[in-house]
Amino acid sequence: MSVFKKLSKEEVLTLAKNTFKHHKNFQIVDTGYENIVVFIDFKYVLRYPRTEKAFLKSIFEHWVLKRLPTSNFKFPKLIYVNENPFFFVTEYIDGIHLNPSDIRKLSEEKQINFAKDYAKAVSEIHKSFNYLEVKEKYLSLNLDKITIPWEDYFKEVLIDYTLPNEAHDKLAKEIYEKWQKIDKTKNQVLVHDDLHTSNIIFKRDDLIGILDFGEASFGTSEQELRQLFRINELCLKEGVKEYNRLTNKSINPNDS
Image (cartoon, rainbow, N blue to C red; front, side, top):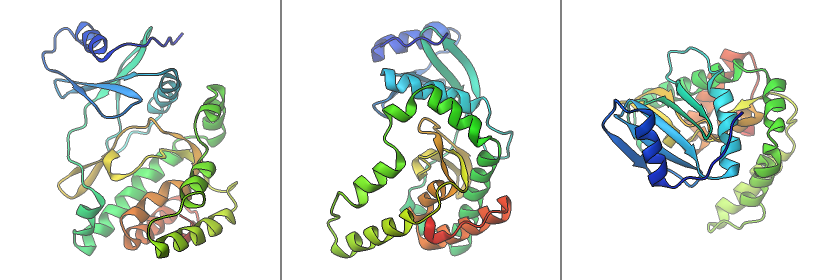
């Protein structure tokens, strides 16, 4: 049975050293408030939950990682799982990060290639999970009660908040109104739900891997593909087109 125990960074570092005694380089990476992350010889990554909420999300993430498909893309591969206290270790994926501005500076051809690879990776993940099983596991951990539903978050950032730029604020509220009309019972899948470029690994200009499934939940294909809009309309349209081709769905770019 998985057990949560609150530990300090120093205690987690000691835990990592005791677990991987034959390794020498241990580096704590301050990547967020939910997990303490330790790089081990830049070969492995240990993720230790800081809070009870993070612990439950880690259990779900571990469940997802065990079921990720074999792919030409690199997804976190489980190496070790400890139940008491609960934490897990994955392989380190070497590469670089590109931010949206970096991608926009690429040639149009390379931007399209990125969008297509994004769609391929996402479609492989979506097709590897049964939506009802995902939902059942997620709800069994009561994660729906401790995380903000996507609909509420969307409303909070687009409707209950006024954007500084008047034109952007008007456009955001128009987009929200269109999104409200979507039939969200369609295209339901396991979603990574945090697939911005910080969680994408590149080799030069090429997308080679996806990181950090800690926010994974259940939702819609449109919900996942929306991240491409943060880059530009070209990537969104080409990504949606490729996703539709690979999944035989008919996602509308205007809904993402």
